[in-house]
Length: 416
Figure 1 (cartoon, rainbow, N blue to C red):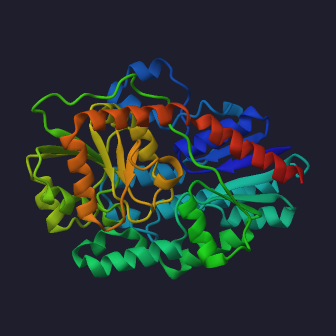
Figure 2 (cartoon, one colour; figure 1 turned 30 degrees about the horizontal axis):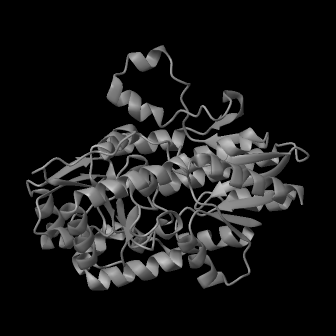
């Protein structure tokens, strides 16, 4: 029995699926865009910063002989982005866009299935926006179709973002989910209808599916894991030191950035905020003004390892997202030993204990965010205890449970 997995990049949850399947001898192959050899003499020549970025394209989880590359569309996308050839990477329509990369990989995987040994390949495991052609071909060949939905269903996403656009019109251009075409939405729904089984990582994502499809779908909820603890002791806040806040993610209103800014404007404590993530293509004036505040440091897009190191020097992680599928930065912050403030539209309810290792506040509630930040700022012993609790939660919630949970369920499904 073997399972073919496809995904254009190397997200941590994809790597965990690969490890889980490989660990139970279920992995037949991995289709992706780019994959570099494991660390070699070249790593010493390119410098630490570039090597960190290259590291995100290495896949030690998969033997090189089972890694199938489809590099051209992704190389074109990276080149067009580097040269700032905006029309080529335009949302959905650009021939070097992210959507184009997903669709190209999907077509290539479907073609590879036609050439595969049907007695060996028992299932395909594919992700949202990159599964349609693969699933159509797999259905024709009698191969099981396993679907992974990393974010809430598009109808829930669109509803929440439309509400945000009405509530905060100047932030509407930052919400790319509102730009998806009807054709893209239809594609997503056909992927779901073709799936034999769906994997999600949070109860919020599961609810977004049952809200629209009822109980007609078979769904497994397997929460992502935390990285290994990054520190043995949380960062301490010294007397007179500002509270070091951290946010990571797109600087867009889907992530609740406007609410974070509003909350910070309500604070009467001494704070500093570090933000890591890309600016939206059209940044609202309120965001530009906020980034000019001397108390705010914007890092831009940083390598993952750099982000984790920044987390270990922070005191509180704030992630007031309006709509997520999980929010892995939450688990990463916990592994760095910092308490988390987030919303129920993330994996917060699945992994946090209110008031123990973090806080879950309603969406669109700057007052609640400000109140929790103030509480942590004014009681360092409480903040330190919460930070220690977050570290302990991370230590007992590693990726191994996710890997085993996915692999066990896949084995059951393809043996049925």
